[in-house]
Image (cartoon, rainbow over the protein chains, first blue to last red):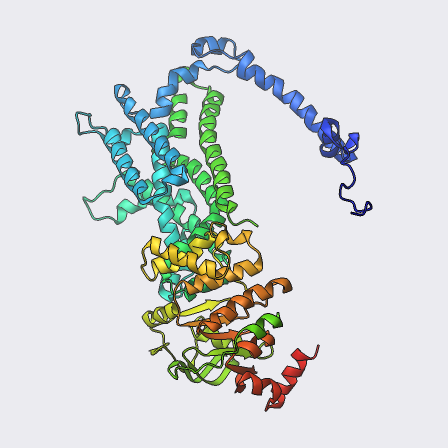
Length: 368
Length: 261
């Protein structure tokens, strides 16, 4: 063996001290140029002036959950969390009969359990559909009642978080398969199907959701024959489904367009039929690509359910507003909006986090 | 490379005489552009055909017409007794019997190697999963890639992916295999591993149509070489006659361009 062969090589050395560690991080990220240094100082200054007063209001000068409105009004320098504890059940459940409010509470729990279970890809089997059907039947029994000794509760009395969840979850769950069909139809070779899908999508996308809700609540009854009436909640639900389907179809179309032609040809070449090809080859890839825009749609529709307030349904935002109309609690809107804002945020942030995880999982296998 | 090919038994075997592909007066246009001009072609069972020609001569389009990835506008194409028309049922029947290997592999990236191979047998041939997997493993062994069965295509090299693509087609037990420039997208060091698999297939008597620029492969394996230029079949002959005694000027020009450098 010759001794000039570098069988050992040069020893590893530590990088220069000024390129690693927190000081280097600060220099690289916050003070790497003069304008970034100025921006950093400005932002720090803003935070320093904004955070202490906010924390004072939120915590240090705030009145606890036992505070009454009289106490809060005398010293208005802090938040009044007594409002939340007093109005919690109204904000969460709306006008659902007080002694029956365990029913919407269980409804929320059922929905969250279903959603959490559906997040696990190991459960993505046909029986999950049956579980959902059973869950939704349970929800219907709980909310309406009228059977098993539960008193009947009209759906005009539904409100708060269960209403928000029902509108958005059922809306999105029904809209999703419809949107897949619309997206496939838009790319179909059959002219009639294509024209139909394009017309539908462009028509719905060209109209604000509010006007669609108005149409559903005000105009639709005019077109129905006398004596036939469709429930207000159902009409809102249908409007949401129609709207969400059009938007999701466009997100899915984007995914479909990202799939190379070779994938279609390979599937064709193996003799797969149209639906087999779509189900086994194209859609799994297209939907994975479409996750970010789809979740974007999910999140915005979850929040857009609050628009039902204009047709007289009391979702979470509606009940919070209604709670503020109580004369003794008038003016505590900051507490009310912060509280429901946090609830909305928890749902939306979970969706966003889950979608990031799903995206990683689905791409893990075939990323080079 | 040429070593391996010359070792491959020169396949002047007796052909069955049974016709499996017949194209009569096939014409195709892309818009105004006449890509295929009056193609007449008859292929017998077990015949190995290499299609060559300059780029844009219509050779890929021709073999893509044979499983209706492209639609011809005039003439008839009959594969194994089934005529290719707009009848979707016929198209699917033909596609089951005709395997295709693409230049860019076109493996399904979201499925493992094994799933790529079992998908069509399970869904098109309605084969039980266990049986399909067993078959797939035997074909993956044959293309010498069985140990990668659980991996995803993206984790394999180009040559490995192309061998999986060949195995995927074989799992459908096709009567004819079409190869559309199977080695053109490969790094040079990976060409041999794919050609070796194709030579093995040829030796087993598979009916093959290969669009390729690998003239060594044509010389050692093909029963017939077809030369296409500007949408027509200019010349077809045995490899010996084709390479040593080309009849047309266009063939001579083409051969001088690809062989003398």
